[in-house]
Image (tube, helix red, strand yellow):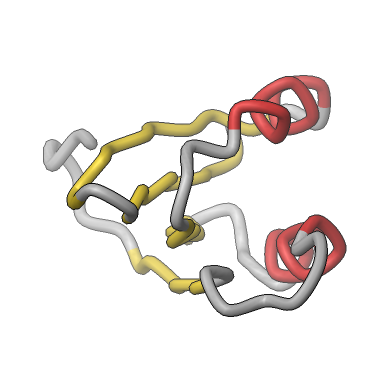
Length: 77
């Protein structure tokens, strides 16, 4: 994750979501302004999400911070 610029980051932890968290992620992205980012916290790397994010015009940085903890920071392009 780049630390070259300061930005406000909202966090969405979906590790305990029962079922697919896709709708929650999309709703959270809708509430994030262009000057903010969303940090998604998940128990696995959400590879299927990357294509959706790219098609919707988002950039993302992924970091594995623990055995079962991934952070994906998503921002508008």
